[in-house]
Amino acid sequence: MSSSSRCVNFLSICIGKKKYSGKMAQAVMTPQVQDAERYFTLVSGHRIPAVGLGTWRSGSRADDSVFNAIVEAGYRHIDTAAEYGVHEEVGFGLQAAIKAGIRREDIFVTTKLWCSDLSPNRVRIGLNNALQELQVDYLDLLLIHWPFHLKEGASRPPKEGEVLDLDMEGVWREMEKLVKENLVRDIGISNFTLKKLDNLLSFAQTMPSVCQMEMHPGWRNDKMLEACKKNGIHVTAYSPLGSSDGGRDLIHDEAVERIAKKLNRTPGQILVKWAMQRGTSAIPKSTHLERIKENIAVFGWEIPVEDFEALCRIPTQKRVLSGEELFVNEEAGPLRSVADVWDHED
Ligand code: NDP
Ligand code: 1BO
Image (tube, rainbow, N blue to C red; front, side, top):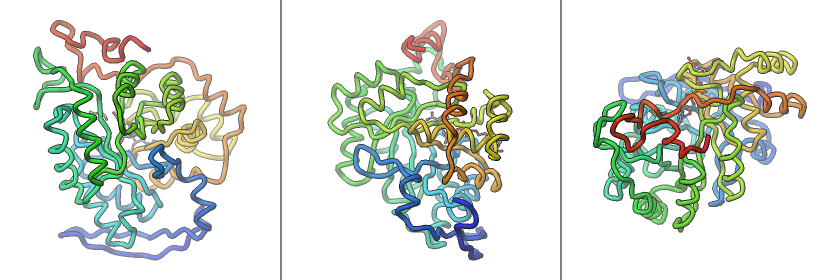
């Protein structure tokens, strides 16, 4: 949305001892016009905003980032995870935004079950912790963060015996119950392979609505995108700018920079828009207000086909997040290599 399509009020909100201040952006375009571009519809019938705020590595700035993203920049989707250690900060930001007048039902909150909660008897505990820390009484989307079961407090990389058997069917059944009880509106997956997706679909009674995967022009991950599309599963692109991990500097990629200059946009906007034009939502992370605003200024324009295709031809396809540090134990296994993590599909 361009700044000319907004009217602005200044506001100041107190949550506990902290004051949240900002300029409140209010859309003045008709809702129908905004919605067509701003949302994707999930298999459940619910809608997911096309752009969300990532919170990995946001640390103590997560509360201000969330508040500013919602109130000042117009975001309606916040992506977080128990493992990011920022649930409480995200909760403060959400509460401040709600106090500022944004309705809870207009904000899409995604979080993820960490690997130590991936057993049937831990799913509800993980959910309850998330609800309490985020100060919400339901989640819009609960994802399996990574499809591996780790012992509580597992080392990185895991020691022998710290990667446990995973009862995926049992875990999914428990997640399905959370949907029936209206504690979670949609359930989904992340970091899955074709093999793991096929297995899940063989027993799922409630379809995964969303699959979150690393996706950017440096790791297109076309196979998973196609498989998800075929099964009606919406894909969210994580690390759409090339990752907080400093892994792939797409912001300074020659093709991205050239196209940004040609279209009079920023590299960040080109990368987010590329994700959207592939039919995926994207969750760029930033703790800087100007970048938060920049990354969502992606509506009302398109990347022309030839430039979109040039971005799809960027060579050196490589994951940034391989999962090696999290799950691989070369000597003891059960995952002895990155190839094992991804079922030898890359
Ligand atoms: P991103 O691809 O979003 O990149 C974030 C990095 O880019 C940060 O260093 C940020 O710095 C910088 N940045 C942000 N905007 C701009 C801009 N406009 N111009 C230049 N630099 C910019 O990385 P993430 O890996 O964080 O992915 C996004 C989100 O996806 C995560 O935060 C998390 O919520 C989710 N995720 C999910 C995973 C999963 O396993 N399901 C795995 C990884 C991520 P700064 O903050 O200083 O602006
Ligand atoms: C440690 C978790 C990886 C980012 O989602």
